[in-house]
Image (cartoon, rainbow, N blue to C red; front, side, top):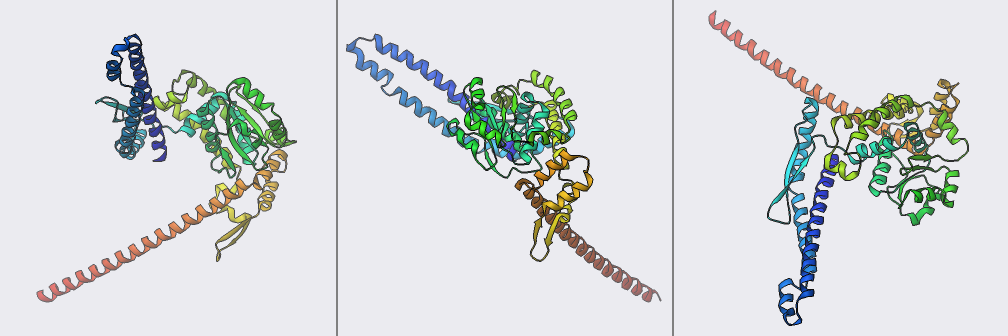
Length: 430
């Protein structure tokens, strides 16, 4: 649904912009020729020439492009989006059957009377999940990325810096995707103007992106007074241009993060396999090429493998709360009558302390995570989900019991009718 429509929207709008650029270029060349004709025409014939070329040719060109845009967007509201749901179902079917030949084709208007054909790849990717994650792992070490995610889990701020707005936005959104099954509970701004750099000193945790003009500008940004102060208070900078991570200088935080065990070996192994794929791929080089060509099955499966490893690791940090649907009940007080639950992080930490007596850094980290707003909301989501599933099971169970009761009743009535018929036949024979 939404993921498919997002990719389709980008693909179709990219085609519209390309057609507008082509038409604009054609009009510019045509206008240059008309201007040359006006320049060499004698003054006596100027009125005739003006009538021929038109005084308002630029206005007419802009009007033509605007009319085309409206026509194009009207077409966008019909055939492609109607086909999206059907295509998504066929795409899922092709994944099961390993059939890569299926693709979605539809026609859209052009500036002439002809139409243009849009072809979408058989495996619909997602901008943040696939291109954003791929862009991150192509530029930043796996170990550093996992450390950044762990900092986000304890609500430390992260600034993503780069020279391209599409790259910075996608990578910032990718961090949100990689955080799952947790949800970022604080400020998120994929793009923040550089003249608002003072925002990095905000006391509220944030995940923001910022675009600058050059690689040197990213380095200058890291050395800005606001940023240096923010790093001492928990800020970490992910520099996509220099492909580096400048971790926070907050005392003991980095030591705790690095001391907490992580699946670095497994993720690094996948990252090594991914790099050759990234070098060969044309779709992963830039955002326009990604929208135009999509991703291959190999690229999609590799990115998904990275996400699965990180997901399972982060999920494991929640212990019994994530493993057991009703595990959250052990770490607080639940009021059945009021349907309210008070989560006590101290109970969760005490249970961990018994298990992790020798793993000091891991215990310190999990204690910080347990008291974060992000984790409290995760527990609440687990509670609501488990209760909803339990209610659904009860409803289904009641429906099944009612059905069996009705069936048993019908069978009894049928058996009684058969017995009466048999008795009547025996009496007649007698």
